Every structure is written in structure tokens, then in C-alpha cells.
Figure (cartoon, rainbow, N blue to C red):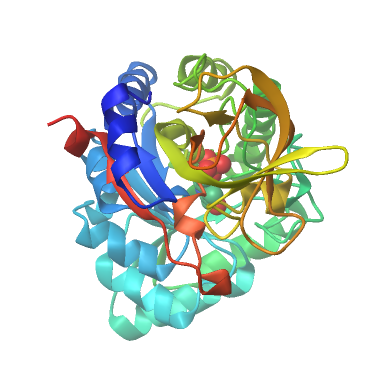
Length: 386
Ligand SMILES: *Cc1c(COP(=O)(O)O)cnc(C)c1O
């Protein structure tokens, strides 16, 4: 939520900036943790969604672990206080350097995405005199029904190991002296709002798990990845994601054996709704057929609309004028730098402040300096309300 105090602070600050509602973040984390405990599931937050120190600290304070996509994220997670046994590491392209970093940190698990990677981890673990716990990331060929750039579990995607290679995986694991096989990992895509996708995933996981068990391999852990979506259309109505529905679908459909660990790894669902990109209207321009609001934020601050055709709610928070149609566009010289085409917003004047909602995930973490533009700074509600 954006309070009056927050708006009066924004008026004094340089824009664009990122603003985080820390009460909403804590509310989201508390509910998530409560439901994880209810269903006996272990949560790992995917750092790649937002790795700001204040956000990581809140995640840590709620007893949630870390999911990392790079060696640097592993280092950051450990430096931020996450216990190594609560850190998992996926990624198709783990370099030797990254693997060594994670081995030295003694993380809970490498989620391996190719047979070659298993062999390299085994070799590097041997050379360091360490044992590596590994799971295999399985590509289950499940359609996440989301944007094609954030679909990861189809057989044409680069992620994971396909079932036809399992026999060879077992051979390689048997031949590897420095690894302990712990279980199976999945992650089929992002911004998934249709719970039947997770149901379908669980049903496939049961079959895959059986295959391993029948070969005499003990599957100690099942990691279902992240992917839970949020409501970008009406974030005020749904500020907290549907964790109950999501975890219940897993509880109802995944066969879990006594003692088995079940993990989930949401990123977006934890942080999207608590973040806003706050920006000023630099110009209002009347075109032949359209009116444009030209913001001081651009795709370099929030790339999702340009990259994935993503929709974010765009709101003029300092005008109470009559609503009118505008194309609300970014400052970068690319036509794809449009935040909302034909959006209904309050009558806008130069200098009005806009909030672009649901910008907490995959927003600031992808902020870049294209056009030599300044990086947008982060501000936190905890500091404003004091
Ligand atoms: C990106 C990613 C996540 C988090 O995805 P969200 O859609 O943000 O929940 C979790 N696990 C893995 C392996 C990922 O690559």
C-alpha cells in the first residue's frame, strides 16, 4: 500500500525510485511460513527475483531458505546469514568456479541440469576432498501455460534432464565417488496462476519418483521449484498470493513418503506485490490520435513489459482528475519501452507521480544503465514511517 506519508516523501525525492512496503512483505512471509509449517513443506526463496539486503533479511527472519541461480547468489545468501544447509543451487550453466564456491560453502544441494554437470561436480568435489549432495533437475514436459520466455519445463526447453536419460544418470551417479544423490528437482515456469499446472506436475513427479524407487534409489527429497504467480491486474485486491491453494494442491497430489523432504522455491510470489516503481510524468503529449504520458522511468528500470509483454498496473497517485486514456511510456528510445498502452489513468499533468505496481520481483534486480541512465534507488516503508 502507498500511504499519504509515502507520497509526501516521494515528492521530495528524485525519481524513478523503487519503493518497498515492508509490512506487506512481512505479512506475505508470515503467511507463507505458517502454511509451509502446516503442510510440512520447506520453503526456499529464489534470490534472483530480488536480492536487496533488506528483503533478504526479512526472508531470513521468517525462517525461509535460499534458492540460488549462480555462484554469486550462493555467496550472497551465505554472507547474508542463510545457513548453508538451507541453500540450494540450480542453473544450466554452473561454471567450475561457481561449483567450487558452492562446494566450499557446503550448501544443501546442487540441482543438476545435465549428466556432464554431475561428472564435473564429482570431479571438483574429489579435488577439494568434499562430498557434494546433488539432486537432478528433471524436465517433466509440463506446460506451465505462461509466457514462452518464462516456460522452462517443456521438452524443447534447455533446462533439466529428460526422463529418457535416467538410465545413464543412474550409471553416472553410481560411478561417482564424491557425490550423494538426494532426490529430484523440478521448476516448470514462472507466473503460473492455474493451479492445475501444479497438480499435473505432482502427478508426473509421483511417476518419476516411482521409477527411481523401483531401481532401488532412495529419493530423499523432492523440490517442486517456484513459479507461483501473482495478480498483476488487480494487485490491491490480491496483495498476498494464493499460498493456501498452491500448497494444498501439492499436499493433495504429491505422494510423500515418511521422512521425505518436500521443498518449494517461490521468488515472484514472495516479493512482487510489495514493490513499486515510483516515477514522475516528465511530459504529457497530445498525439494525433492518442495522448502520451512520458515517464522518467524506463525499460532499464523495469524491463518486464518490454521483455515479456508483461502488464503492470499503472496509477497516477497525485492527481484526482477525471480518468482519461493515455499511452504511458518509458523514457528510453525504444518503442517497446511502453508501460501501459491505452491505460485509463487520472488526468495527468507534468510532474505528477505514478506508481507502477507489482514491481518487487524481476524489477530492480534487472535495473541497468542502458543509455547511461542512473540506477533507481530503493526506499523502504520502515524508514518512511518513523
Ligand atoms: C527462477 C526460479 C525460481 C523462482 O521462480 P518464480 O517464478 O519467481 O517463483 C525457482 N527455482 C528455480 C530453479 C528458478 O530458476
